[in-house]
Length: 316
Image (cartoon, rainbow, N blue to C red; front, side):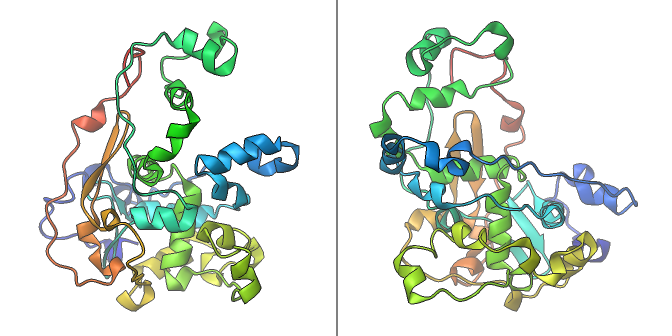
């Protein structure tokens, strides 16, 4: 892990090393990480959902998510990936260089749109009345908390025709960059797809499978593989760490295509309400089949990351 405890001579990029998990692990203080995975009720109970609701989910652009079954999260894999993640650059630091989950990956894995508007804005709406209008009831005080801002998303659903106009890939990626364990489905499926030495043992798709859509989104195909068929190197944390420490350029897949929006290959801010993270695609150009040049300095958002929405009900 972390390539034999070696760090670069110039630590200006890794300014948060004193808080990074590797500092404590190298001292023998290993840790147990239990990523959370909550199955979406609609997906696990589709047979009970009114067809009109399924239709609207498809209309707003989330229909493909209903085809992704629940997945067994490999805690060892998630732990090993988190240990190589650097929040300073939003990239995994592997022996051969940097890699990351890009907007293109979110579309491939979850079939969410890249192009669209960010979720920004201000509102002075009465949140209590918003609950009554959107939910049909007002939650009692014991169910309210100043540390929760999920009602903001309910406001977006007031007009379902506008839901598909947002860039949901950038919204998901912003939260993943902000909390690398925040979307374990995307994180795990990305590693399975990109790192050959950790790839799943899957049967090739038949023409019939492709015709009926079993191959897309990728998370749909990958999540159907039972845990018994996971790669042997994913059985223990020590084996996964060793595998990652021995990665070479040839062990990482290069995905070359012009079918995606050019936005998926540029440095742009990912914005969702108070969450702002940068898509540092210029640091991982090899993933798109290009030569890797000298990237720009990563954006330093340390001050902005201290801001949150707790206690505020008048803006978002």
